[in-house]
Length: 484
Image (cartoon, rainbow, N blue to C red; front, side, top):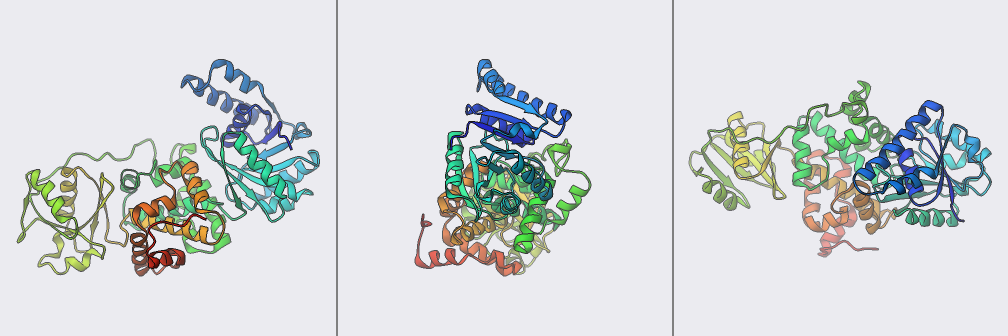
């Protein structure tokens, strides 16, 4: 069918953005809110978003007026009677959505497609609440909707094949890249992203690394556009908590249980940017300042030691094999196993260089404050942002990144989505520089497998055990992931 008149119910940040996307594509839009006050807020969001686009040279003033002119705002759902498609973007509360879909089922013409922008709730439950289950789908946009290119098109076991194809074609008409998936909690992006963010909160709660240091490690080290805590604040801590609850209800996987720290902040009303304070407040992330020290002698051991020693030596530090102030140790094994072999174990700090800018510095239970501080100073002099952490498998970056990649392999192996679609979803939905399978190939399948084995050996969490498909590919000597 031709979609020419589209309704959007709920004009908060997402709903207003979705309305703008449809209007930009030349469709007539009916925006519906609960009352006049909410409607005025929605109008304001539309006007400010398009005004910003004009200011940045992305829209002409004339084009902006055309877009706004295609949007009709109302507080009456009856005005959706002639809509070809209605997308809901109301709060993520299942009972509210079911009630709305029952209402829309009675208002809209029989051929109207009803879509939900839910990021995690079961589309099947919404479809079952209507008399048109075959014409109910998920159409999950990403924030900000006018900018982000991904749309997850979610089919249920009841969805008509033609309807799914029509919505997929519409997403393309909107200038988006559609990825069609089944109705599983979190779909592709949130099912992979949110457990990683939740895990970051657990690392802080367990004292393995600090908030700012984790964000630095994942941006400057892993190359992600935002650190986990900056991203949680953007998403909304309450939204992240709700998604994790839905994931846990479906999987009963302990990794999907919301971090207690996340629950505590939500209870305290610290929801992120929407409330003015979340993991961050008005303050910015702590800057990486110049070195402070008085260190002076060092030794380096393990793979990569000579290159680092040469750089530090060029900066005026002395490599001393017998009695250094600090021993920097490159190792894939627990650093403490090497420390106990020293006459003074308190001098050893583990080192893991990540990318071109970050050095993870692992402190054992025996490491002295003096040695830990010395390692930080040396890394700054070497041109690396130091990320202090505890001596745990994976340190920070691998502990967050490898389980995420493993989840992607399991998702693909289960037949839920192709490797190419998963890669596209994470690049376009999260702004990542590469999808998980592209990252796996860059890291090396064997290195990823071995890192997961180390995580599993330490934490005994089945989710950290390498996916069987990854194990098989490494055993076969494959360097790339099969695209199928």
